[in-house]
Image (cartoon, rainbow, N blue to C red; front, side, top):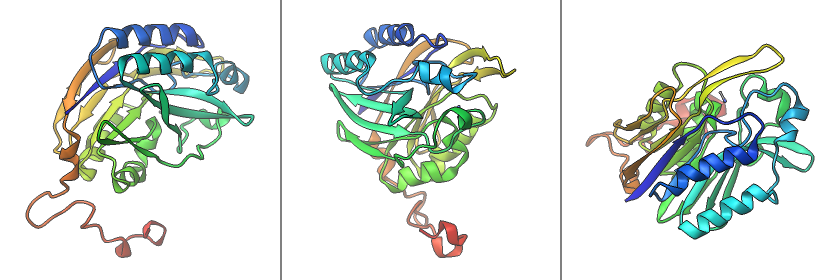
Length: 267
Ligand code: ACM
């Protein structure tokens, strides 16, 4: 069994130090193996310009990563969350998974949403899975949800637990993630932020909270509310996701018939 902690936050826009400080305070008072934070939880979301996004961007050498590595090593935990990444003169909307003092994965968001397309480059990492404490984790970020290929790819790669840092604004994303869980028979921890942000371009975004964990069998194991900055935990048995058998005649993934699908999906 593994305990997941969902940290639903309300970032202070562009204040990386304060955002890490409040996330760390929630981590410090919580017992869990894997802590999951929202997309861009260190910077906030609603940038007006690429320069503004760049001003909150981090490299792997940034001090905040020293703090995250140190906390994860001291506690023997994993921490996954989203940040604006600066690498090779390019900005990415990324998520790290740092465990026991080491960077295990750095995923760069594949499908950019709305104005992100103006500030970030499309991710080039590809979908990743990593092993931690005997479980296989996959990572996707927010709007990756609307492309079922994202979760399906991670499931085909053997992910048992998908970590899904998010800044969801559309009202039905959480319901869609329920489908992503049952159609792949995987655990999915969608961790969203709360609060509202505006920018000088006229965007006015309200983030929908309602972070959740859905099991491979379609149970909501955890559901948070729309407004609260909080941390909640749930124990999961990742091995449950290895059983893809729906009934004595149907096995999810194995029953796919790629030759019948559109040519671009026959791989
Ligand atoms: C989103 O991808 N932040 C909606």
